[in-house]
Image 1 (cartoon, helix red, strand yellow):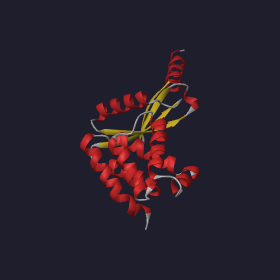
Image 2 (image 1 turned 120 degrees about the vertical axis):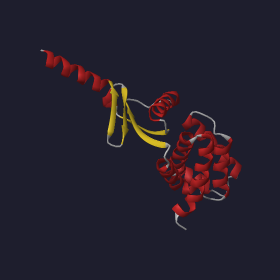
Image 3 (image 1 turned 90 degrees about the vertical axis):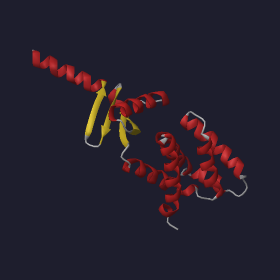
Image 4 (image 1 turned 135 degrees about the vertical axis):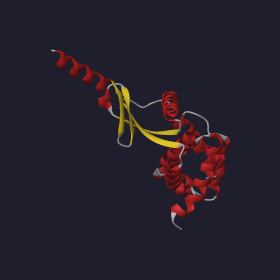
Length: 183
């Protein structure tokens, strides 16, 4: 059976949960981290091993996700991972993540931004950026972060073709341009 067919009911169910408590971003982060974690070859062998109890698999995944996300999984998130393990559907996680993001982007009250920074943003910084963007656009916001070491500091926020450049590099370039015009 095609993974997208398997993934669709899971993505829909998670999206409904996220709609209830506006936890879209948290779910997206859990799905993306889980998908990345579970496509690792060593982790894939661990999950496929018949010698490891499902509760041990779940405990290991929860501990790894806690480390990646820098927070405990919610009850719903932990239950979701458990259901995937019970039904041998962990291989569908990348498809579930993709479908979930697609559902987020098709709703009228959701918006996806790409945030580029000079370093790995921590959770409070990500939450602040999301909060600022949600206040500005009055929509549920999720962000995808990338690192560009050339920025020195600050961030660049991309929304399709629209770019909000709040980087130090851009400010220095703007200052240099102003100085060259005045002299």
